Amino acid sequence: MKNSKNQSTNINFLIVVREARFRAEQLKREVKEEATGETRFLAVTESEIKAACETIRSDVHIAGSSMKKVHGCLQPGADYMTYQDTNASNFKLRVGPNYKKTGAKAPSAASLYSLHSIDLLKSREKLCSIGSSQHIQLPTDFDHLPNMDEIRKAGIPRLFIVNTQIPELAPSLLGANQPDDVGFSLIFYFVIKPEVIEQMNSGQLSPQMKLFKQYVAEHKKNPDIRRRFKALGIANNAKELGLPSMISGLIDKFNGKPAIINKVAQIYDSGGDMEWFEVDISIFDFPMLARKALNSLKDRVAEVAIRAGFVMQGETDEELPECLLGGAEICKSCLKIERAIFLV
Image 1 (spheres, rainbow, N blue to C red):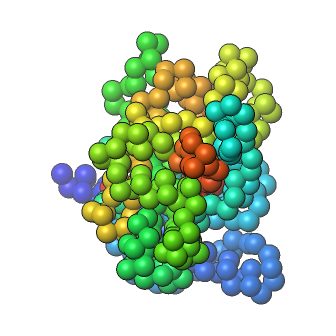
Image 2: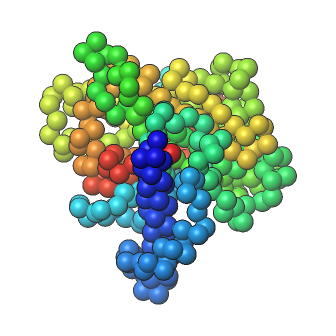
Image 3: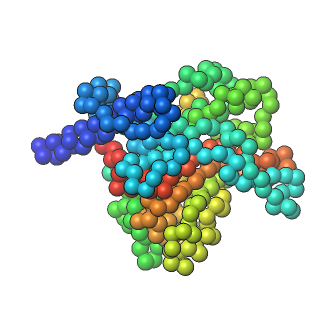
């Protein structure tokens, strides 16, 4: 037992130092950018790490501290995982009138939520309900937002979390998940935009605002609105990877196509107070061919430029045009599964 306790302490210490180093580096990088306009990650001193450590509990992960937000993709060989904002217009979404007949799509207008941060995390068990986890400190930097009374009046959450649960091991020959595979989580944290709250409270709701507000309020009792949430994943450079034809064919089939995730999703919230709302998407429950295609990319993931977005599906003219809820880009050569932070 003594060795086990020491091992746990060491893991906690490593997590604290890693997050403290991230925090100190971010602070110095921001100062450097303001002075020169350049993006550089500078070495930090031991005293800076120690000072940052004092603000972090050893058993709590600071949301978003496992990856770094940058502007523009980094060069291959970067020794840290990064992501960046994506322009909503990169996603072509449904537009009316008469979409069922025309199938017309157009670049999305500005998203409802801003990307706050992304995490890559692992644990001894599959990570669920990130918002209620005692081991994750959610974002708290909301000074730019209206007060919570205004947010509750609008009827949509301040923080929107999407937790993508991804298998780490290949499925069996028959397609079953490996029984001991708890996988890892790629977690997106989105924060509502102030102008969206103002627009909603003035009564000028866009179709997407109406649909998401209804989704938040009625997902437990309204199967029609629950099935409307969908995810879009785009591997921007899939054809450059030189994958076997069978795998590349599967990727082409799913690449950039919206996926209704109702059957593979669990929804959590903060009890209706609009503090946070979360959708957990279990890739474990995707069809076998989709899981095999994704697993085939596991060892090549550092070479893939990934763009992800989330949207409520509009169907009638009154529900269109669709608009992105939130999105992100993860640059190639930056996402490395073995660097996922392990939560105790």
